[in-house]
Image (cartoon, rainbow, N blue to C red; front, side, top):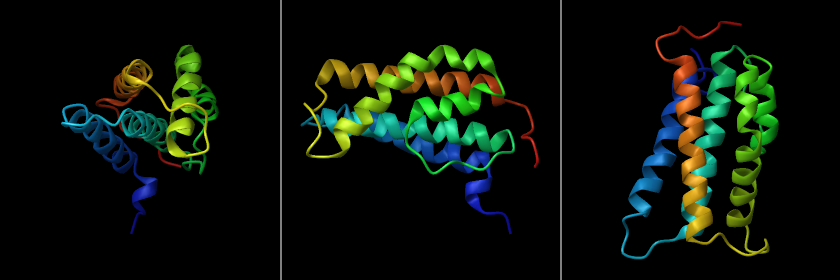
Length: 136
């Protein structure tokens, strides 16, 4: 039986759950920008890991989007254009995750993080849609 972690579709589905959570959280009576930023980062992370799995690699157990993107860039250099965006979103994920981080993300930062997560989703979907995954 194949582990869900070795199926790109499982990663993409979990990524979508994070981004759907963002959509719901943004319409809540009390908007928690730190939680929105966290789930935006998580969605992007899972899309990048899903892309690596789609390319036949194991998903690394890291949270740094720049490192993940660099690994993805080995397969498609055009993805490296998202490097600065990944750096910003990684930072947002970190500062929103722990109480001892620097200032929590404000509305503008969280919205920017959501936009970046959507750009990453779009980039990965464009590259994987309708194409069979690589098999190791």
